[in-house]
Image 1 (cartoon, rainbow, N blue to C red):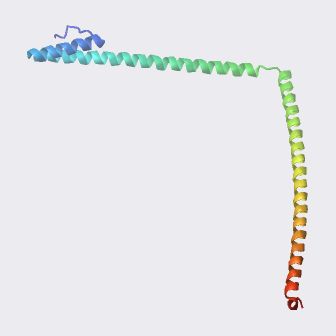
Image 2: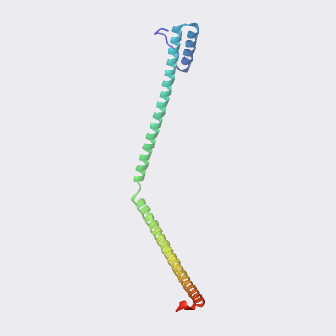
Image 3: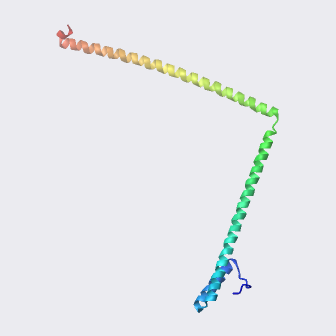
Length: 155
């Protein structure tokens, strides 16, 4: 192939290059085989270049979309900043009322929990006193039985 000659590029050029290379090898024409390999390589390069262009376009589209999202976010922020002082004060008052109500509810719950804990403590103390009295009575009965079995040791 002369330098003036152009070859078909892309996938078709790659196939044509393979065919030329195979034909050149089959008939022993090294020049045709070399030309086929070169055409095949050129076709592969063009296919890869097309893929790279597609990837670059995709990256550009993604960058454009991100820029648009950023622009929209800035616009949202600007609109939020335009809220009137009255609206902001109303929101602050509502938040304050909710926080106060939540604090009162939490305090009531804490007080109820403390009362429940106090009652449980008293019950536990009462149960411990009853158990101590029962154990003391059992000890006295056991001591009396021991005295009845061996009266000399009681002295």
